[in-house]
Length: 93
Image 1: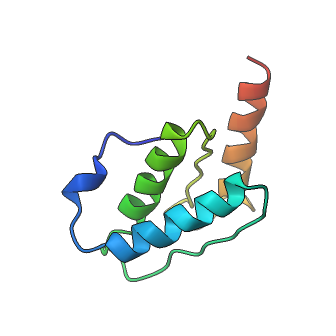
Image 2: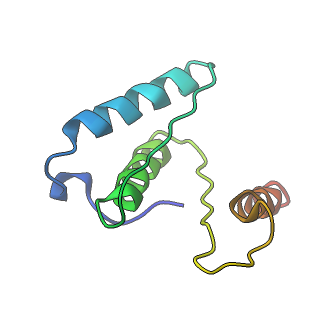
């Protein structure tokens, strides 16, 4: 899932975007890659991941998006469940 937030509007994350682009390049070359984005609330983690999703979508990569439930009691592996359901729906289209 991509966002309409343009990458140009975010200042000061050039290094992080470059790191994520490099990871995406590696994945598109056929290798596995895991990237962890962490930090305090409100510093732009979601924006950064959405920017990567936009870049990936522009390259023709199908993007899956899952979110942790903000309240206790969410089903186990909830973000993965969301992504797998979306992928299954995409494959059945």
